[in-house]
Length: 127
Image: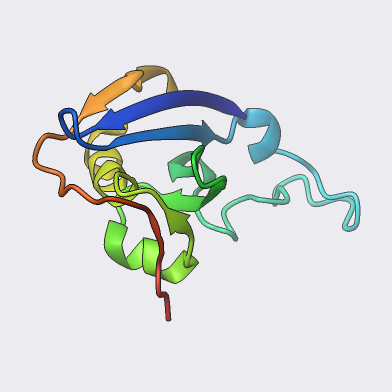
C-alpha cells in the first residue's frame, strides 16, 4: 500500500491527524492462496468493488478507521463503520471525496475553516 499522512485543521481550533492509504497493484492483483487459478479474479478484485477507488483512512489520534469508496456520502459511510473519530474526520472525509486525485497528490495539510469546532471525538452511532 502507498500512504500519506495528512494533518487537518479548522483554523486554530481542532487538529486531526490521518493516515490515508491506497491499494497498490501488488494488493489489487494478489492471487488467492485458497482458490488457486483465479488469475482473472484477484482476491480483492472487482467482486469487492473497485479497489483503485478505495482508500483506508486511519485516525491517528483514536487509532480507528475504515476503508472508504471515494465519492460516497461521508456521514452515511462513517455511520456504517461506527468508528471512533476526532472532530475533523467527517469534514476531512467530505473533502477527500471531492478532492482525491491519487495518493501522491494529497497535501500534508488541509485547512477546513468552516468545519465545526468540537471539544472531543466521539464514536459514530451507526446502524
